[in-house]
Length: 124
Image 1 (cartoon, rainbow, N blue to C red):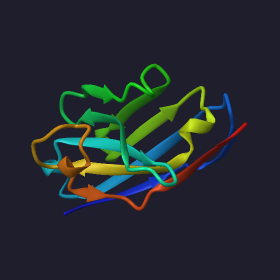
Image 2 (spheres, helix red, strand yellow):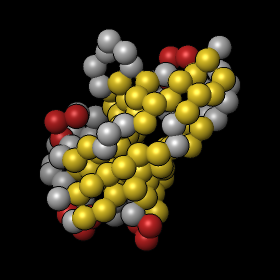
Image 3 (spheres, rainbow, N blue to C red):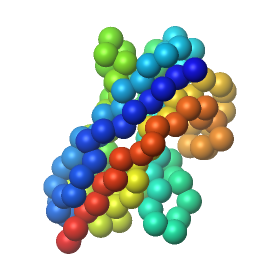
């Protein structure tokens, strides 16, 4: 069992930056990777980015590549999402998830444990 808790969401203006955190606990040694997803109102949950726990390789959705950065501090069992140059299209609930089995990084079904989400709202 792995527990994940997101934090750091809020209301920002277009062009601003925001950094989200995801603290994970429990059987963290069983975790292959951690991922970020987001869900806008009326839309499905979409992949944002992910990081391999051991190799630190990162993966990004095309919509955020170059603007968002995923990083992690294994000693603190915390993953981060640095978001720069935010636009209104980035408004969504952002979810952190732990991946303990094989499968595509961009597929929600590949992730076993999810947080409750943190709201990010970008105003014009």
